[in-house]
Amino acid sequence: MPTVIEPFRIKAVEPLRMTTPEERRRILEAADWNLFRVAAEDILIDLLTDSGTGAMSAQQWAGIMRGDESYAGARSWYRFRDRVRELTGFDHIIPTHQGRAAERILFSCLGVRDRVVVSNTHFDTTRANVEFLGGRALDLPTPEALRPGEIHPFKGNIDLQALVDVLDDDAIDVACVILTITNNSGGGQPASLANIRAASEISRSRAVPFFLDACRFAENAYFIKLREEGYADRSVESIARETFSLADGATFSAKKDGLANIGGFLGSNDDRLAEQEEALLILTEGFPTYGGMAGRDLEAIAVGLREVVEEDYLRYRTASVAYLGNGLAAAGYPIVQPPGGHAIYIDAGAFLPDIPPRAFPAHALACALYLEGGIRSVEIGTLMFGGTDPATGEERTAPLELLRLAVPRRVYTKSHIDYVLEVARAVAERREGVSGYRIVEEPAQLRHFTARLAPLA
Ligand code: F0G
Image 1 (tube, helix red, strand yellow):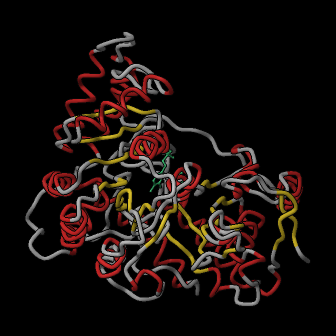
Image 2 (tube, protein in one colour):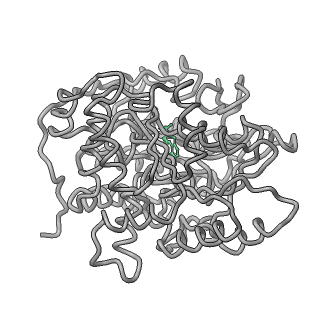
Image 3 (cartoon, helix red, strand yellow):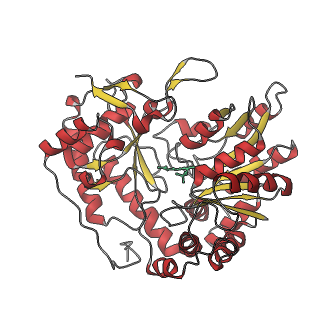
């Protein structure tokens, strides 16, 4: 049958609260026009993030009850460690409370001060962790990644020639290479195994450690199965294992492809580095057999890491995200093509060409979707990545002004998405009325989370 159904039925439901357009206007104004400041209760369809917002399975909830909360050596720890090791093959598994804790520990122990970290594209927390520790985060996406409308199977690839040039430049001290799979800020696009393998060889042959930011490894592996020659008959599990085998370590947020609401880990094959990482873990996260998590979280992740590589799940997952993307494209929205694994990215710079980057067109579109229908999405553009460059002191703008509609895992049905498309069509009809925004107040780091804004018109 051509219809790709949700490969599950629903056992527990959570009511949604309806609001009127007048209420939403008051709510957004009171939140200083920043959707991060709006209470979740005041949102109808929350596409802010796919991180930690997924629905757990009955097996995961059973695992929650099984959780062993012993401080040291809990049963749940061994179940977690064994599954992570089976999947990734890393010698050392360091449990952290979420992905950014793994990033902070990795970059602290590698030492990035006055050095460069190279990526296809750093996610915002990854970039912020590098910069907070005095390093420079350098993005080398494949050139197709910067052409939103162009269809290419692996727009999450790193630019291999640019990588060689940077690594061979004696003036640049590279601390490590970290490939983000899928490339979140670049449109949720996958990297091919050929690209990952080549980037790994280029880095390792120059004695530069090669890491993965593997939050969405299963979606990446599924795209490899569908799109890369020679992988159609391989299981997602085996593609994922091959991917991890190419890296010296990985940071992982279990809030995405761990199918859990919290958690993460740092994997490493370097004994000395792992020793330092474990010391910092004990200081800041917790004892090495739980890190920043409860025993029940370790159980939920151990189960989630099995469910996430099931192909019925991944077929439904990618089909439902593509359904949203194709519907938006049909409504006249220029989207990053092809649809990504976890989210759709609207090219808001192209959709609202009269709003310049410094007036945050993607943020303006996010506010319009909320006012129209209670939908929350997130700007990935100059509000997120702009501001003053700590290295040069210059005002920077993002390469693209994107609006991300991220789809939580196993949460919304097709009629929820149909509603989102109706709201988007209504906004498209009156796009001339959408105005830009200015920042009234902003913090020094990660300003998009807490900045206060105001409409220009
Ligand atoms: N790396 C990537 C690629 C991410 O997408 C995220 C989080 C992190 C690292 C950090 O993980 O949140 O567990 O600390 N992304 C979320 C998002 C916040 O909305 O895309 P974390």
